[in-house]
Length: 338
Image 1: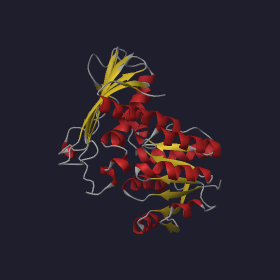
Image 2: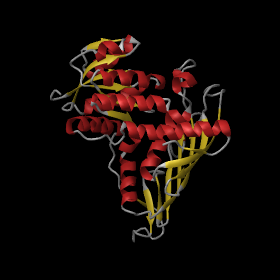
Image 3: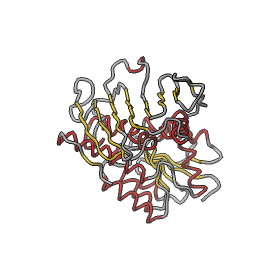
Image 4: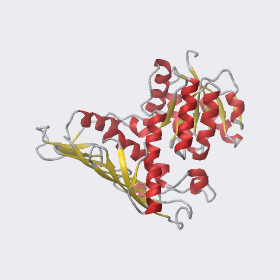
């Protein structure tokens, strides 16, 4: 590998802007060599922003280049597996946006391709790289909450996708708000509380606001391996969301305390004398989770580390989401496949 990791960006739409911040903030670690998008004007725009010299509309052209060490896949969900497998087989390390794929079979094939090629596969679950949640992880690890028995999380967004956007179609998105955004919260809850083993899920279409194919609103009941329970509420048709008190709630309750993230990070705990039965603020140094995530990807390549959000971790979060969709179809609790 060259002194700097040479990256090819595949997919230059909206989320690639966030990834671009990561590359621009780590110029000593990365060099973006090529940009690819079926809309050439987007590839050219991102290439100009990142200083890439090569632009193409065909990802095969990018994968055939010897001056690329890794690819960053920011494509519609249904294309993740195809491109990631091809990239691994071409000897490129892979960072792929969440969800890892739309089926477990696809996820397994991606993981196998990366393993067989000896390359890194990382899924872009950026919430694990948010400072507020990293601090929350520290509090949990320190036992400040005691035994966690209840978790509450939500996602509130007013999505204004174009009428014919891939995000509105089951064939290209794999589902709606749960697989598109709720999977971030699923991944975070797995990281903080433990593995999710059983789910009950209800969801609703909101065709007036979003789509007549995939859900815009959902509620999921979660059972964790350690005995805790939880609930996750997701909404892509939250009119007025930008002015709401919070965007994504997280509240964990334990035998010795609880914390929430409304307006910052606040903890109440019997193990903290200064708490005195009340929630007190926890200092958190702000930083960009996408910048942190991209840097982590680079460090894993340079140092031979397994990513915090590896392909296997991405698969586990996808398994929870797909079990939830099965629950909605059967109106029963569903065990999450391992």
